[in-house]
Image (cartoon, rainbow, N blue to C red; front, side, top):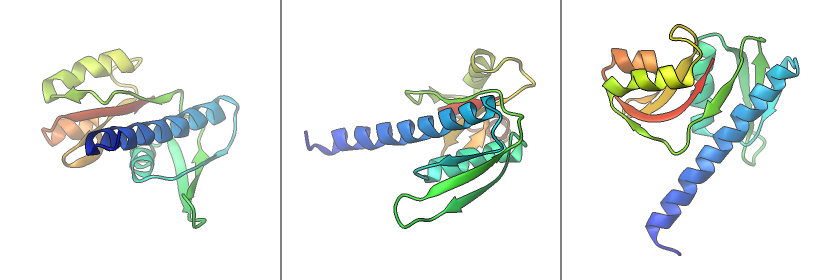
Length: 142
């Protein structure tokens, strides 16, 4: 239908699948020993997710190439990433519940990060704790 509700759901699904494809491509490129990977299309969410991974040195530099269409991103790989993925649907998580997700998604407590989208932006679980904010689970990497 053409109700605004269904359109909103569709755009959310598209965002998730675009991020999902991006993270799948990165994981595959890492597994096959590639030094870089091309991601397309680019999106704000993808860029923010990559920035979180980069901050923790799981990926190297990345470059956004605007080719007048959807844009693409060239990501340098460091061989440090074992797995990254999307969590769908985006579950609402209150601050005390983050721990449960860390235990479920990551191989150990001091290895890897859960990524959340919060009212303060997209961040990893450690930053969310520091800023005392919950949010929606976006994905993870380790």
